[in-house]
Every structure is written in structure tokens, then in C-alpha cells.
Length: 281
Image (cartoon, rainbow, N blue to C red):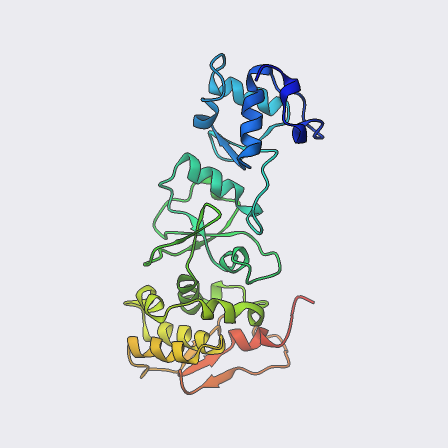
């Protein structure tokens, strides 16, 4: 395409943008038609034969078609439209496009949000291995140090914890998980979970972790799956196992009592605290 007049109609007059240089009109159209949210230096290198990739990126940024991200070699695309609940993961998307070997994925409570189970916005969270060094470009996220033992899912082009990984994390580290609104979506996570995959995530972990995770599945309206998980794990002989006892604020006066579950040998502070009350109101 030879001139700015050949911009696609929907791109003309977008506030905050100016007509791109003639040799980059095609680039803007391509990014729009692909609904690209991120443009990397490697992609930009194919846009113009008369400019270096850095020069092309600078020209598009100066005219409002790109905007900066904390990831070297990547920019956000002004016309990109994220899939539902994925708008908070632009930096993660950029990092993975620039360096695909980065062991980061959507994790924690965000797993429930991007899958449409949690209907309220939550702080974007990622899963990242405990021993790996977190890139500075991902410092904006809540980071859950966890290495999944089963494969990840892919959702809208980004890696996401499976439901089984989410449940295993919740049962293993209840004190690090925000339980608000849990009654609204736990059943969906449990409905989509395979006990054998949950067991694979929990392999080698203490009996209390198995007990808490099975209890989660029971509270998530999957008693058969909970029983199946218990049958795959170690005996629950050394309980009781406390669920959420160390969560801050438990000493505050509240109209609830912890629940004792003899079937799972669990004393539940975490779920019961948030099951019938919304403490954010």
C-alpha cells in the first residue's frame, strides 16, 4: 500500500493516532486485521525494507499505533482487543513472545477468572517455579511460586494452570490463597477436575495436603471425586489437618466457627470463613 489514505476504514481518525508513514501503512493494517495485542521486534523487522526494526517501532509509537511495555523488544498494539478477562496479561504475553522459554503462566485465582468461573475482577496472578529467577518485566504480577507436575492448558494463546493444578495449590498453600467469593466458583473448578491428575500434582506431598485438597473437592460438590482422590493418597492417620488456620485476621470477632470434617480429618477455617459472608462489603 502506498499512502496513509489506504489505511483500513476502521483505523482512520482513532483518537491519539496520526497517519503512519507510507511504508508502514500495511503494517498497521496487518496488526489490526490480526487483532495483535503485542508486536515484537522480530515482527516489526518484516514491516519495512527502508527502516531498521527500531526505526519502524519508533515511528509507529510516535504516531500512537504502539505503546511501551516493560518487556524489551516488544510493544503493545493500540488496536489490539484482548479476549475476556485476559487484558491484565499483556506483559506476560509480550514476554512469552519475546522469550518463549520463560516458565511463567497464568495461575492462582486468575485461573478461575480467565476461565470465566470467577465473575469479579481479581489482581492478575502468575505461576512461576520456586527456584527460577523472575524477570523484571513480570514484577507487576502477583507471583505464586509453584511448579506444575502436569501439563498446562492454553487459553487465548497463553499458558494457564489446569483446574487440577489450581486445586492442588489451594490445598497445599491455603494461607497464600485469597478465599473471597470461593462459594461462587469452587464447584466449577471441581466439576472440571480429574482426581487422577490432582493426585499427580500432589504426589509426594504430606497427607494433610491430600486431606485438604480432597475436602475442597467435597465442598465443591464432587464427593465421588474427593473419595477417589483419598483412595490414591496416603492414609490420614496423623490429623487433624488444619485448613487455613494461619490466615491473617482469624482472631477478629466473627459470626462463624471452624468446621470439623471427620471424613477428611480436616478442621476448616478457610472455606467456612468465606462461604456465607462477603467480608469485602
